[in-house]
Structure formats: structure tokens, C-alpha cells
Image (cartoon, rainbow, N blue to C red):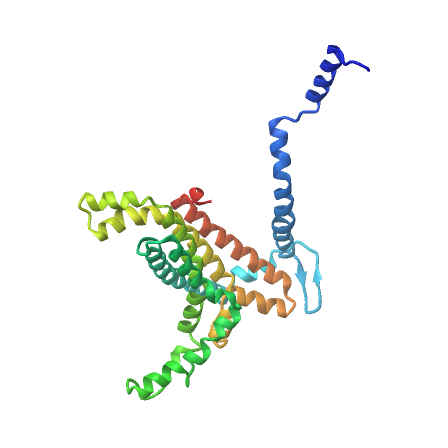
Length: 302
């Protein structure tokens, strides 16, 4: 039987050391799959949109070029600026309403429901509407808000009004209401997650120190809930800025948003112009997200 000498063992050990990777190389290898995925499915499409935004086009096809015409038409038109302002108006109104509703729903679940099991049950109840399509949930408001809908019929039969209220449907009110319905859960979830992490001993300590319920809310709970509120804000604002179907259906074609404008441009085969608007919208959203991140540190929630 052959025996292994000490020299052979030393050679085996040295060969193993020769193939050992450095910690830095291991880190790069671990990050490679995520880098490939993000590069292929996120960065590359954005780069393609940026390139196409400088191309020329006509009614039939696109022509590879490097022109600033699409950006000039986008940023130089008062109609486009009006549409951007209208989109920001929707984002602001929906954000305020979803933040108000989302915080109080999350606060009720986190601090007024005693058992964890019941908290999860009630939270799952909040997610039940998301088992259906956004389009179905959106158009379900039409028979409620319409001229002969449930709200107008109830008000007329009660004698409160003598004729139907016209602005309930196909108006900015209908658009905002539908968006609040669609996106409130995106505000509830991160805030609820943040509130559940708050040590209840802090609340008890504030009460023992003589703080009122309002003082406890404003001085203890709200500051600790800021990361969840910031994450919910990012979710809601980005969703509203990219929404075109809700604006188109609930406004009856009487209002517009940037996403709807891009959708119409693509239907007319004006892809470079739509790409330019997409780049401008992306920059605007990134600036808003950067401003939020400067104010609130959300790394502890990630």
C-alpha cells in the first residue's frame, strides 16, 4: 500500500492555496448574477429608450440619428408642460389622501389590534381587492358614480338633491378617487411594517412620562414611522406618474397625463417622441425619489 509522505501533503496544501480566491473576487462573483439581471432587464432597456429618443421618425418608420428635436418639442410646448403639471397634481392629491388613509389604517392594525393573528387576518382582508384586476376595480366605480348610478340615485331618492351631480364621474374627482382606491395598499404595507417594528415599551414610557395620546403620536410614533411613509410615497408617486388607463377611463378623455400622452404617441408610431417623454418623466421621478431619500433614511427598512 502506497503511503503519503509529508512532502506530498505539503504539495496538496500548496495547490489548494493556489486556487483559493480572494475575498474581493468572491464578492464580485456573488454580485455577478444580480448585475447581469439588472443590466439586462433594467439598464439595457433604459439605455435603448435613451438612444431612440434622439432618432428621427415619420408616419411609417424610425431613422437612426442624433437629433434634439424630440426634446425640443417636448420641453418647448406649453401643452406638454400643462400635461406634466396635471400629472404632478394627480400625484400630489393621491399621495396626500393615501398617506392619510394608509397611516391610520396601519396605526389601527399595529396599535389597536392586540393579537398578531388578528392583525394578519385584517391585513389580508385589506389585500382582498388586489385579487382582481386593476381595470375591473377601476371600472367598478362607473355604476357607482354615474349619472344614474348608486350615489346619485340615493341622493335624489333621499331628497338631498333634485338632479344628478355631474362631476362625480368623468372628472378629476373620479380619477383621484379611483387612484386612491387602487394604490392605498401600497402605502399601508410599508407603514404597517414600520409600525410593527416599533418597541411598544417606547409608547408605554411616553405615557408613563405624562404624554398625551397626541404627544405620543407626534413625538414617538410619527418620527419612527417616517421610513415606511417614505417607501410608501415612492411606491404611490411612481405608480400615479406611470398610470394612463385610470386617467383615460375615469376622466372620459377630458384629462391627460404624461403616461397617457406617451401611450397616444406610441399608437401613432411616434416612438422617438414617446421615448423622449419617457426620459424626461424618468428624470423627474428620480429627482423626486432622490429628494425623499435626502430627507428620510430608508436603509433600515430595506
